[in-house]
Length: 190
Image 1 (cartoon, rainbow, N blue to C red):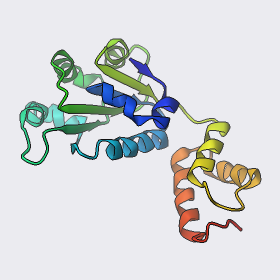
Image 2 (cartoon, rainbow, N blue to C red):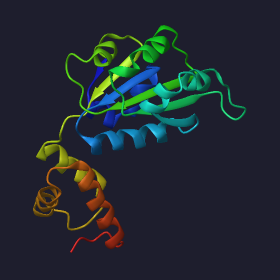
Image 3 (cartoon, helix red, strand yellow):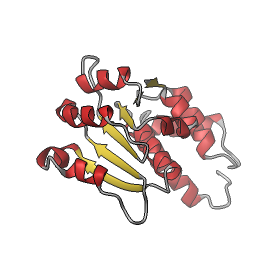
């Protein structure tokens, strides 16, 4: 099922419907923001993170995590980073036997339209896919307003300057926002 990134960004609970989700694209900052929101939303889940290479080197690693029940939490959230078509067989196994007690969230760089794994997620009923394309000036402007809500002195000129200095990169802009929050404790931008 294809999901829009701006909708997921506003309502992360939509991912709760799917046992598997693939988040891919060139916008690293947006993927990081979505990952942070996923971690917050599924905070009662035991959270585990792997890279695709770890799973490919140890064939049983993912199966062990999916079958191993923790004493502290019955639910698991597994992140798999740097995903490509090489992990196709493992994902097919999970898609065949979805389990409500675990969620697998995959993160990938930009995937071609003909990518096998992308096609599986676009057609799958138990799987969601989110494309994270580069932000527009308008998206970044809204992002800044949301993140700096309550700050006095935030105007379009300041927003344009921040977006320009970040090179239209959300990750860089996020670092700039952190600096502003650290420097302007009184929430007055001067």
